[in-house]
View 1 (cartoon, rainbow, N blue to C red):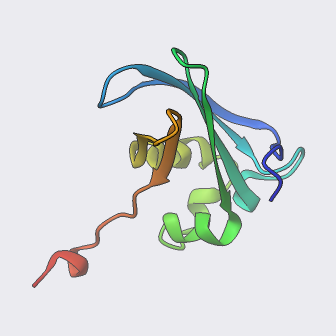
View 2 (view 1 turned 120 degrees about the horizontal axis):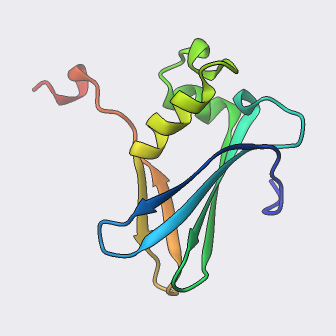
View 3 (view 1 turned 60 degrees about the vertical axis):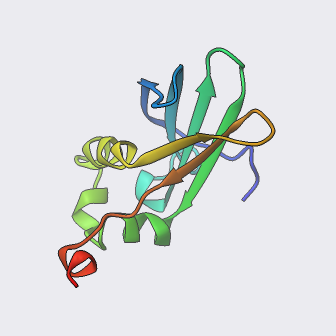
Length: 114
């Protein structure tokens, strides 16, 4: 996926980082005029350093992140779903001074039972 690929804006919001500072998060569909269920592009802009980190999520990975619940990716629910995904977004400093982005997988009860 080319790093410059992004489509229509789904959501934009500011977030405070656990290690200090603030970032601007922008979430786009993967291509113009395509539904967000086809994939997402998450951009994280550090307002202090001006670094931008980008995370591309392909459709199959997006479906896994919502536990294969296709209704969560419908147009009338996508903003709520993206908000939920951003609650699991892990933003860490990278060795080059930039940022690294990860979406943490949900732990299911069976994953935590021993």
